Length: 616
Ligand code: M6R
Image (tube, rainbow, N blue to C red; front, side, top):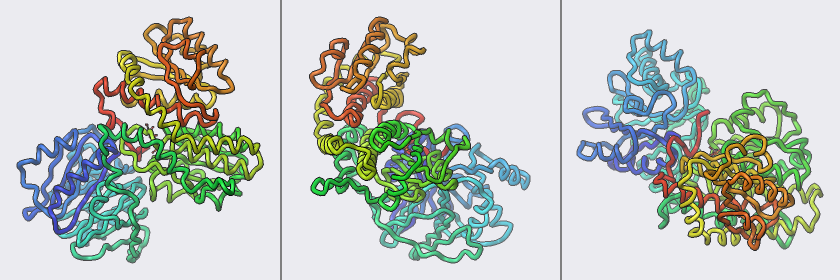
């Protein structure tokens, strides 16, 4: 969602901010803006649409200044336009501010400010912050850092903030609560980012602000941090860490799009997610991050998995893995529903939160509920140092590397890999898995990267199938057992990047309604690898063919039954049924990708979507 980049140093800020805005594009946004500190005061540039529009607009304008803040906005309060775009300024133009997050009590605060005579220019919740801080400062006659602290004590909700003021043109104030913010420390210069992407080119020394932190960054002085919850505002010593990100990971590396690059990175993502976790000699699978809580997991009454979107689909796959192998009941919940449902949680429950970004607001809220009610809370996420990594009691990273395309691809298969390892490790310790199956699954996991590679080699064939699907308005994805979440994921991929309406269903369920949609115009993509209910899937396909539906199937190499009933077939190598999602997912990603390209859609930045959904 929204993105923040800011700079204070000796260099011209604008080129650094602009590049930073481009690097933040992947998060999803619909307007962008920059504020620069110049001798004449604060100069602002804002544009609706892409960063490119902003760049064109600024081309012949004075963009000098060595202090500046910049923002990409994903609209929440008020439509995407220049008024609502950040930065927002105080009425006298002396202070400018950018904000990620949501001010939940903005209506009350706004009314108080309006009563004081403040005239608002935008419909945003953010504008409240700049007027509130200014009003506190004017009333109390105090320096800006103090005014920010006092004002933030009145704010309910989440924020990552960067503020500049003509009161001190060599100072940048930052603050954080519930929304990530990093301060990158360079050589007499500071780089601020809502994530590492706009910073990594310049420095790897970063300080992750903690909730309630207010940072004061002054030219040629060390970073000073205090916390709004500390009434004395005592200085905290900044904890400098190394940013685990490389520039190369943020670039397209010869591919046309990030999404295609990331689809092709899956063999590596799966391998990296297994690396160091399987010891074949000792016959042991071990996930270091959860060792301390392993006993709690082994004794769990139940696993509650909370997640959203693609990560929720991983959760559904994990349900099969954990129930089959570990024999512990599993509930898989949409985090957004779970958090508002007063769920029954026992102290011997283990709540597993899955999120690639580790910043999804609903999943983080579910984590909080789990913690408050005494459950053991484990996280699985892809971003080192993310809020989820810090808020859960323990967890395992999926090592997919940064994912820039909005559509999740490699993080999905990496999540499945970690969940499979977790299930295997627990099952062996609990004695719920026959050793022959344990070894077979380990062996199949180890060979999964090669199997994914062999599916990737079929891209051209999939491209031809995409020509057919791209002409359709609707598509249905079906699967059973562990292939049902794969069907859901296939439908999600197609709709989010190609804007074709798609539904995922358990194959047997369609006769309870959706079969009414089947006609010659409905492509039905069936995920039908060898599995214990293969014959049942065959019967379900017969029902569709009888209604003149067109079958596109994903089957195992050598399959003749389902492929004989299909207009198009994509073959995948055989793998244990529980691990089939690792290979059956790949053709669905490629199919959606090519359909979207044919329909001229921006696959990396689909409309209305954000990479990390940090608001509820
Ligand atoms: O970062 P998370 O995994 O928590 O994100 C949850 C969903 O927003 C995400 O999986 C979304 O559905 C995908 N980007 C779709 O491809």
